[in-house]
Image (tube, rainbow, N blue to C red; front, side, top):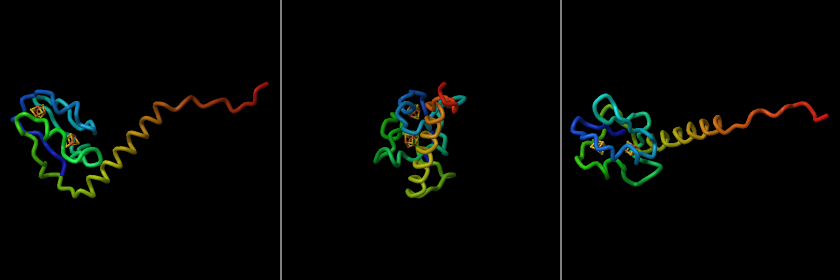
Length: 102
Ligand code: SF4
Ligand code: SF4
């Protein structure tokens, strides 16, 4: 399952930089987890980093996103592919001229 942040969040900002998937961001009032990016840290760490660090223990599983460990790993692989694809687009050099030098 993806995780979620409850309204007990105190906006301490500890979790956001530690998420390996960039799934945590500041919402309108409190921090939020994008369930489409959260893998429960599968593929990166043995334990969810945000849960380990949160000082008020306000990050339970999101019951709306029931996923097996295999599904979480598949999500991890998809996120890795997406990131690699974006990096390729950014790093791709301009297309060299096809014409032969004169
Ligand atoms: Fe990010 Fe891991 Fe927390 Fe999910 S469990 S929000 S991937 S730090
Ligand atoms: Fe909120 Fe916990 Fe994240 Fe701090 S670590 S911003 S309290 S969810």
